Length: 119
Image (cartoon, rainbow, N blue to C red; front, side):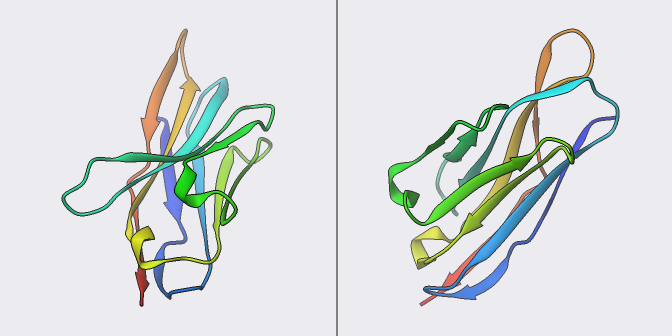
């Protein structure tokens, strides 16, 4: 069974840094686009950053210049380096990936990891 396993969340002071990791496990053929989303209490789940298989990236405006998404295709892992964190970045962060386990790509989600930024 394919799963996305996240790690790296926690509590950090404003201006600090955290690095999130998300590894795909199980049996599958390939991974297409990967990304990170976040959901604050009472809000919808919003896109933070995406990365293609070839390494092309895109970011939501509020994190540009502070967050960096990357991936290690050999390890089936996507990362989110978060610097200069602000209290507004507090949310549950979810990784997302389009994974080909049979014929067509299927969207998978991680279990979510809490990021809390104190002022």
